[in-house]
Amino acid sequence: MNGRTRRLSALLPNLLLGLAIVIMLFPFVWMLMMSLKTQVQNTAAVPLWFFTPTLENYRNVIERNNFLQFTKNSMIVAVTATALGMLLGLPAAYAIARFKQRGLSLWILVSRIIPYITFLLPLFLVFTRLNLIGSYTALIISHLIITLPLIVWITIAFFEDIPTDLEEAALVDGSSRVGAFVRIILPLVAPGIVTAGILAMIFSWNQFLFSLILGGPNTKTVPVAVFNFLSYGSQDYGAIAAAAVLITLPIILLSLTVQKYIVKGLTAGGVKG
Image 1: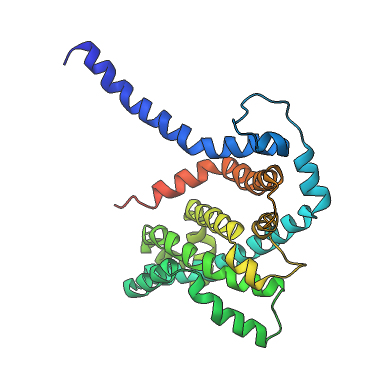
Image 2: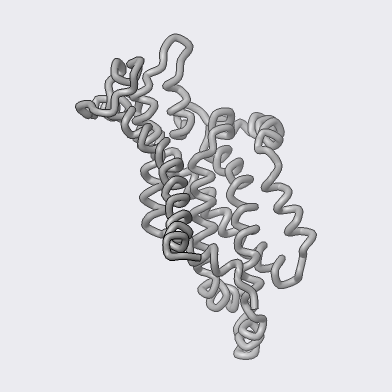
């Protein structure tokens, strides 16, 4: 293999990586550009790449559509559903890992794979009987179907990596099993907890179906708010794009802030030995 061939072989992976990055980022860049254009520019026959940006779409979304309230609703539902998922899921994952309940972990995976619409009708009937349709309670409980299996499935591998000797030593020193779990085990699996929590919150934040059917005017979340910008007569593409940017931005900032923990968590969970 001559020098030119070696250089081409080294360059090809970088070109493919660059192409993949461009393909993944293009929809977001296009969405950002649409949010800064007027309706006339967005509906032009030939796409405009050079234009004078305007923030009118963002003002329209925030001031005229109570978007901050929708964002607050999404934050309440996503954070609470993730916190409850942690409270219930971490002990469950620990028990599955320690007692080798492979069958139970498989059922949790199956519940994660089942389409969410399967749960929608039973939940709707139950919450209707309880007069909870349109409440935060209904949304948070329904979002547990998203967050709980995900948290359990991700953190099982991390608990399996913790030697049982650490717990036994803590028990010998007089600690209870709960105390050993809280003070010793949980700090050791912190990367996995952060990873599971961030992914669960992202899935909850983006959930549309449960929020559309089980939510109400006062608990409407941001995905439903964006959907309401669509109409049969016309579509305000700039406002839709601006709302989509506002929805995506918190998740992007959160992911960038904790990206090192996510990478560490995803790689640590797959290492055995």
